[in-house]
Image (tube, rainbow, N blue to C red; front, top):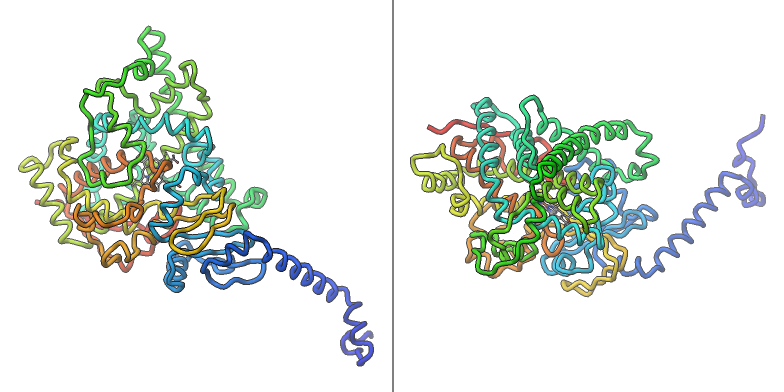
Length: 559
Ligand code: HEM
C-alpha cells in the first residue's frame, strides 16, 4: 500500500516532491497570478486615487465585498452608518471587487455632483430596473433624457396639480373608511397608503378612473413591493446580478409573473387613453395637445407660485414652469399629453417609450409617497405633542366643518403639517441614496480628494440629513428645523430628499400636495397611536426606505 507522499519526504527530495504535486503547483500558480493581478491593480491611477479616500480596510480581490455578505437589508444599512461614524468622515470609499464606490455625506460635495450638468448619468446599478422601467426618465441619459424631461416636467405644473384636488380628496376619504375598519387594532398602514397612492396616480397622472370590479391599486402595489424586494436582493447579493445566473433562480420566474401584473396594468391604461384620443379625433374634436402648444406665453397672466417653505428648495425646471405660467393655456395631465404628443407630427415618441414613462411614473410616484406618509403617521403616533399641534392647525383651518373637502388654498395654510412632512423626509428620506456614474474626474471640495472617472458616486441623503454641521440635534424629530429663520444659514444641498439640480424629482410638488391632502384627511378624523419608539425602527435601506417590521399603528376616531 502506498504511503502518503509527505511521509516519504526526506530532506533532499522535499522540494522536488512538493513541486511535482499537481495540487500544490496549481495553488502556487493561482497565488502567483493573483499577486501579479494585485500588483497591476494597485498600480492603476483609478485605484491609486480611490485608495486616497478614507475607507474600511480591504482584503485581496474582494476589497470590501466580504463585509456585506450574509447581511440582511437592515444589517447593510446599519453597517454603512457604522462605517461612516467609525471613520468619522463625510466621504468614504468602498471596493466591491475592482469596483470603486464613493459615498458622500456632506452638502458641499453633494452640490458638486447634483448641481452639475455633467454628472447626470445614473450608475450601472439602475440597469436592474430595465426589464421593468425600460429606458424611462429615471434611467435614461443624454438627449433622450433631456427631451423627455422637457416634455414631462410641465405636466406637473401647479395649475394641473390644482385640478387633481377632487381626486386627492376622494382617495383620502377612501383611506379614512379603510382605517375606520381597523379602529382600535394594530395594523400596517403602509399597505393602505400604498394602494391609495396607486389609485390616485391612476386617476391623476394617467387620467384613468378605477372601475369597481378591479382591485387594481392593491394588486399593483403588492407586485411593485415584491419587485422592489427582488431588485434589492440582487443589489445586495452581487452574484445574482448577472442575468445568466439570476435566470437560473426561482426569483427570475417570480419576476416574470410580477412584471406581467405591472405591465398589464400599464398596457390597459395606455389602451384606454388611446381609445379616448381616437374617439375625440373621430368626432372632429380638436387636439388638446395642439391647443396646449399653440397658446402664446402671456406675461400678464397670474403666476401660481407655491406658497411654501419649499420655495427655499433649490430651484429647478419645475419652478421655472410655474413662474412662467401661461395663464389660459390648456394644460394636459401626464398621459394625455404623452399620447397626444405621440400622435402629433414632429414628435418622436413611440408606444414603447410611452409605456416606459408610464411605468417610471407609476413606480417613482407611488412607493416614495406611500413610504413618506407611513413614516409621518408612525412619527405622529410617537410624538403626541407634535400630533396635537398638527390637529390644532387643522381645526383652525376647517373650524367646525372638519368633514369638508380640502381645497388648494387650505393646503397653503398647512404650514405646521408641511414642516412635519419635511422633517419626516429629512430623517427618513424615502429615496435614501442616489447613485451616479461620473464620466469625468471629480475634485471634491471637502478635502484634497479626486474621484476618478468611472466611479459610482453615492449621494447619501440619509447621512447628509443627519450631519450635525447643518442640523442641531440631528437625530431628534423637530419640525421647527424648517422654520424660515432656521433654514437661512443652512446650505441648500443639506436637504435633498427630492434630489436637486437638473435631475431632481419631477413629482416633488405633486408629492407634497398629495401628502398634505391624505394626511390632513386622516389626522382630522383619527388620533394616531404608535406602540414603538423611534429607536425601535429597523430601517431597511431598500430601494425605497422602509421599516423592516412594517408601519404598525393604531387609530382612534376623534370625538
Ligand atoms: C415623497 C415623495 C417622493 C420622493 C421623496 C421622491 C424622490 C426622488 C428622488 C430622490 C429622485 C432622484 C432619483 C435618482 O436620481 O436616482 C426622484 C426622481 C424622480 N421622481 Fe420622485 N420622489 C417622490 C415622489 C414622486 C412622484 C409623486 C412622482 C411622479 C408622480 C415622481 C417622479 C419622479 C421621476 C420621474 C424621477 C426621475 C427624474 C429624472 O431623472 O429626470 N416622484 N424622486
